[in-house]
Structure formats: structure tokens, C-alpha cells
Image 1 (cartoon, rainbow over the protein chains, first blue to last red):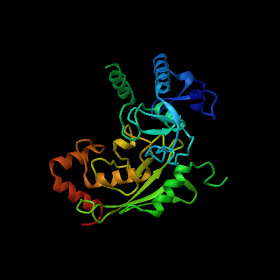
Image 2: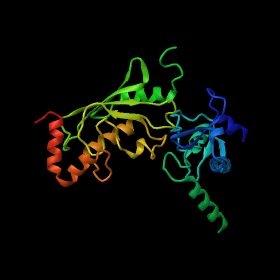
Image 3: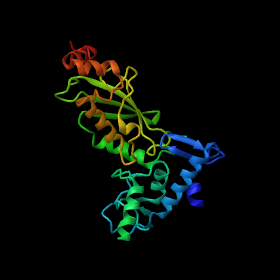
Image 4: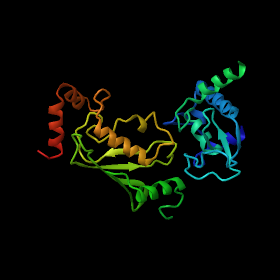
Length: 120
Length: 150
């Protein structure tokens, strides 16, 4: 939890800044209760997505968010659609929009359907 | 502080690629004093009403880019249902359909495509869209008038 929290700190301001929508920046002390719940849920969902270290075995060579080549050992996060990104890069995006940047698939729906598949 | 200090590697990489492998009909050159501000020129696509025109645009990469979309505006006056008098563009990927997997290159290609295929059903300039739907030929004539070609 701490790591995610720090990630979204805006160092120019005292209070952490969140994005209610990708275009709406809001200081933590200006969030409504509803927005706080939404953000807390989102943080929880993001943490359910598997992470690992880049091992070079995937076809994907570049993190399309920072456009840097993955290096062996880089912390990465795996989305249900099988796209991978640097953990730091994708977490920043997922806090704004819960979609895969590459295929635009909503992550939540994919998560739920993968749970369903697991149950069958 | 030099202009590239603190500039994300991604912006440098995109700029280098834009220079090394330019897109046909599109040029994007960073301003000398601001690496986040680009002078853009798009040539009117072939077989579109805008063929023969050269359109200047400005593109700015906000602090949050690529988490937030670039800001793009037509500087050259254009008669188009999805572009208003101030040059603002109605294009979903510049707003709610932005994704950090998109790049300056893909944004400019989408704008070029918007010139090839104006969409009067999702207008920004209502009067233009109306004209486009009622009498496309007259609308295209207006395009040419604004372009100063007739």
C-alpha cells in the first residue's frame, strides 16, 4: 500500500494527488467519500494483478508507456490480456483508467471473467 | 537548466524517431526553446477536399504526458465539421480515449485521417457540420474558399 501511495505523491504539493478521471487531478483532501472509496478499491484491484521480474522470455521487448526496452530483472506487472508493463508505469496509468493501454480492454471485466474461468 | 533537463526519455525517443522516420505528409519539429512544444505541418490528404492545402498545427506535451494526451490545435484556419474556429479538434483519442500506448506519431496520423474522413455526426463546429450534411458540395466549396484556392 505504501509504495502505491508514494507513487502518486506530487512532490510539488503537500498532499497526494489522485485522478478521479484521467483528466481530473484532485488533492487527497478534496476527494468526496465516494471518490475515496473508488480509489481505495482501485488500489486493491491493482494489487491483485500479478507482478514479476522481466525474464526476457516474452515477445514484448519494450514498455510502451516509457518506451524503454525491458531489462532482465525489471519489475513488471502482467495484465489479464497478457500485456506487460513496468510496474511503476502501468500502476500510474491504472490509477487513472482501469484499462490496458495497448488493447484498451477494461481490466476489471477481464479480471472477473478470469475468476469465472477459474471457478468452472 | 537546459531545455532537455528533466525531459522524459520517452519524449527524446519519440522526437528522434519523428526526425529519423518522418510520416508521409506530416512534419513535427520541436521548438528550439521548448522540447515539449512542436510546430506541426500536415498536408491535405490526397482525394480529400483538403488536398493541396498545408495546415499548421501546434502540439504541446503536458507535464503528465504520456499519462495525459498531447494538446493539439490547428493554427491554420480550416473549414471542417470536427474543428472549431479556434482550431480545437474533436477527436476521441485526444480526450477520453487517450492511452499512453499512443504517441505523437499516432495522434498526428489520426488527425490526418480526420481530414480524409470528416465526421459531421460528431460535430464541434455545428454550422459546418450542418452545411456538410445538407450540401456536401457546397461545404467542400467553402473548404476551398477558406484555403484560398478558388
